[in-house]
Image (cartoon, rainbow, N blue to C red; front, top):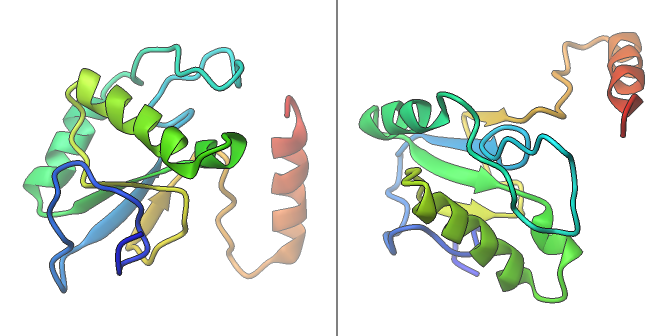
Length: 134
């Protein structure tokens, strides 16, 4: 594991101090994931527009962290990380790191997130909404 908390990166470079970082979830955000979890395989195409979005982030100087919980479902952490790296490379999607850890970032882009606005009742309502279909 590297000193910044990531476990692997797309191009071998270390994070530059002061560089902007954004964390983007893999399943349902980068990987279309139209049929949900299917035995751990990555079976679907990228989400429409994601390549252009990631290229834009890269051009703006962001470090792109792909965030996933997939390694938690495998016998070896690195197997889950490498599955994501191979997918990103295969589809020409720019990224700097793949990790299953929550690292400091400007923003976290995730299809299962609840934005905390100080109101716990809203959080409970959103949690109930997310439970549907889980």
